Length: 328
Image (cartoon, rainbow, N blue to C red; front, side):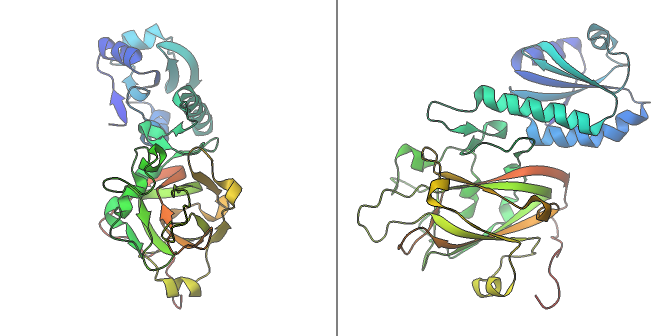
């Protein structure tokens, strides 16, 4: 549950104790501005809620007058931020920009407070592993990926399914399992170095950047040692995965080159900053890993994270053919 409706003083005090950060939305049923800003608040809660770390609540001030009076709430809506049970900031009135600014600042501080471990790895929303820092003002929206619709062409079937790319756990490769003992939790290409990944989303996204993690073992002279991606082409709002020949005939929305120095030495992750203006209303994304860094025949990808903003949920019963123009 993204937002918790408070029904008693005891319930609220318990949350202030159990969660490091608590956001409280004081509202009233008769308040028009409260209803107007509610979708913004709910969207932020869906993106940023983290169990026992960032908790979003709604408090009906007419029903919970004791709580409202305790925190000097005199107008609706009023949003109050708590850290370790202490009131730190308040936003009065239905100002979406101010509310977003304050809560994104909170999320950034929360990431710093539990982000980097001893090995320099970051922590993402909901406790998910992240291999790179999240751009200021944005959040990890990888949870908006629809795993049932994922498709990956040219995958070596001896390795993981494509949904492993979006697993929230730390990659096994960081534990030194380069060639893997047991079931691999990464994907590798099959007949050559190319991979074509189709990602449908559960909501319409604004995509700011991608985090791509690749953890091939050290090259020990084995011709089968996989490579890291080098050239990556992106296509938006397709209704299906592109074929490799098809991709050659369709202009990419953006093509990026990952340089060797772009890979973080500790996490094996490269952050790909996108031309944000071209990724404003994204319902699906095709990632074409065109080639790799080296002379190998295989490509390896361990994790992918999507960074940006999430909008309203979409009905996944039928994907819209947005972007499929005649003659493409």
